[in-house]
Length: 203
Image (cartoon, rainbow, N blue to C red):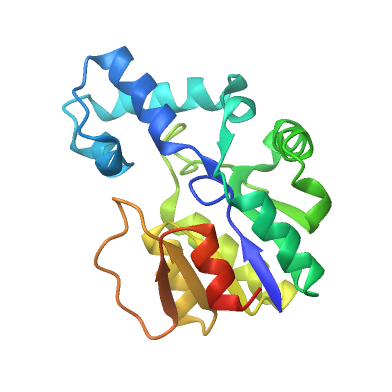
């Protein structure tokens, strides 16, 4: 099987460290870790322009190189490759972040499992609003990559991206996160851990 794999909040623990830095900067109170997620940024009283500037500042810092890997991920990736599956990392991070992304993957021992690493050519953000996450554009980008590569399934956490892929006939393994609850779709299988993914695929 050809399997697409997202990075942030699927492979790399991203939302929690991001929101902790966000809370520290703006004095925002966070809930328990299980409830921390990207939806809290939009729900905060921080002005959109300040939120956008913070995201841009953090993305341009060493942040992506400091993230931790979900503990079960490396072992499951190895088993998937040993079972003959083809893995492709597909992220909405901008192409200009390739060096820090591939360096991180290499240092974490993950790069060797992938047939390719695909980053978004036109960047992370909505073109007219520098720093605003481009949710819809990222969904279209990942759908195009999945189609071009002939991916049969995709590991994802983003609600809009998961729905777009599923509507296009691609099976989505949706990692349970606080910000993606409520999506029900015949092509979506909700999972909680990498070990559960391994059981679903049979490795």
